Amino acid sequence: MKLLLKAGIFILGLFFTVAVFAQENKPVPLKTIPVKNKKDDSILYKKDSTVSNKNGVRQKDISDVLAEFLNIQPEKKPDTVTTKPSITVIPALGYTLVTRLAFALSGNMAFRTGPQSRISTIIASSAITENKQFTFPIQTNIWSKNNNYNFVGDYRYYKYPQSTFGLGSSSNIKNEDPMDYSYFEFYETVLRHISGNCYLGLGYIFDNHWNVSDKGNLDGTVSDYSSYGKAAHSISSGFTINALLDSRDNAINPSKGGYVSIQYRDNYSFLGSSSNWRSLIVDARKYIKLPEGSDNVLALWSYDWLILSGRPAYLDLPSTQWDTFSVTGRGYIQGRFRGADMVYFEGEYRYKITANGLIGGVVFLNGESLSAAPGSKLQAIQPGYGPGLRIKLNTISKTNISIDYGFGREGSRGLFIDVGEIF
Image (cartoon, rainbow, N blue to C red; front, side):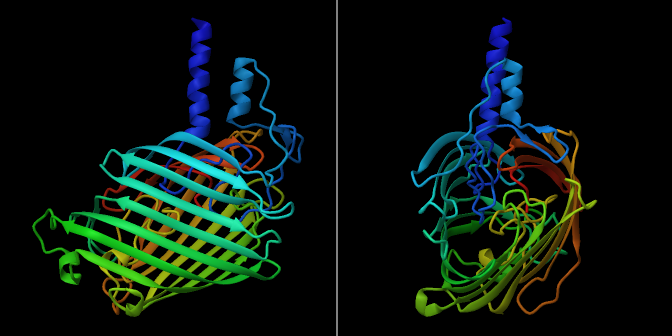
């Protein structure tokens, strides 16, 4: 019986180690392979799984703990990702407020295009959720042999029932309007190394929403979606100009440095867009060791998403958790706030609980302000806050499993599970 119990715990632990899935586009990095769609060339790989901090304390992750519990030899990790692709397909399980329980099949491929190139990744997953949603995202991050070019792709198909709650950050949660739609996205960007940590590039973006329907506000009031202008089908198609400055020491779990990404988007009717409109996204982050010399980190994030001109389709407007990694606004459901302009700020303090790094904690506070229709002013700042736990998934890449409980206004609250740091 004791042997069966150990075997059961091992199987559950193994599944948890490699099969946690929270956001539809953030699968688990499998051991020494960082698969998150972010620039990363700073991860150090070692043949030995022993990684010690500056005080000589051996750092541990989930696989180390399981190996000790079962009295088995710890896994010997590869020293690096090579030009030979490493492919993994795994089942996955996760939870978000908008999906509830989600079941997925996820796959990733990691490789180098040359001996000195940064790690390139291709990520794909297919998920069915408790809320009858179906998602199929594919993300690519390919580096050229000499790292002079970076090709970043994001392609998605969604069948996605999801409620909207009106426009502006002063919208009332009681004004829930259940929607349903199908969605296809094609984003492709080419970045060219300029100097140091600076990259510039161009891209093409295509968003297609069809079979869009809604039930109207459940409280009987007129929905903002109806007032803004319903559209059963809409297309946004245009070019982007991109700039990137990335000095983070580790893109999966930064402890110092900064990150600034700027994207200017211009949509044209001659490219198939339903209307001409322009937007700007500025994503800025800063990481500070606090106290200096410790492993604790103060992380700061600003995310501004602005419609500069024109009138996008309702579902193309800036919205909570519709950023690239679906992580803005912990404490609120995806799509809770929507509007023409979105100004967002978040601060998070990350600290160790155990000296071996297996368990950590965070406290976070965020605030978002959105306008309503284009040309209107920003409305009330809506705060989100809460605590969280971090469980070390991999000591080499410093990847954590993030478990947060967020609180917002009007009784909004919920559990948020993710892989890697939120930002």
